[in-house]
Structure formats: structure tokens, C-alpha cells
Image (cartoon, rainbow, N blue to C red):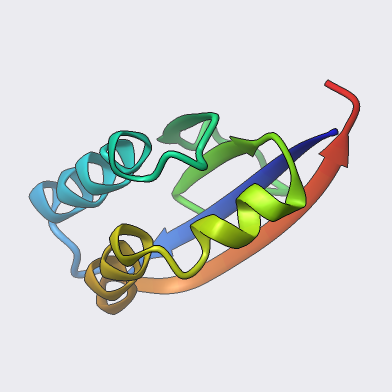
Length: 100
């Protein structure tokens, strides 16, 4: 079973485009630092009136819940969280398991 770790975040209004790009760059580097990540995609929202104002999304794939559990405390992930958290005013994390 594949685990889809879905992260949606909303930047604070004062966050600059350069800071937003730094967050994107940091998250995009995670697969090269954390072997448990099978794949990662990230991108800006395409407007949806039901999007609750979230700006960006990330989908990380893991081959199992055990691999997701390896990812969570990994230093690169913890460092990324510490870097991004002060720039965010909203965050939603949702994990689903699928056969694909």
C-alpha cells in the first residue's frame, strides 16, 4: 500500500515571493536527503472556491506507514519544519493509504 502524505499551507500575508520560493526549494530538496520518500510533488494552488485560502500543496509518497514514520523525525524534515513554520498562518496535513 502507498501512503500519500498531503500537506497544504497558507503563507502569512507579509511573506515575500523570495521567502515562498525558499520554502519550495527546501521542500523539493527533501527526497535527496530522506531515503524514505518515494516521490514528492509540490505546487501553487489553482484557484478553487473550496480551497480555504491555502496557497501551496505538497504530496509525498511513501511505500508504507513505516517509511512515513521514518520521515517524520528525520533531521532534514525537522529542519524544514522549523524553517517554514514562522512563515505560515495555516497548515493542513492529511494522510491516505491507497493500493497505487
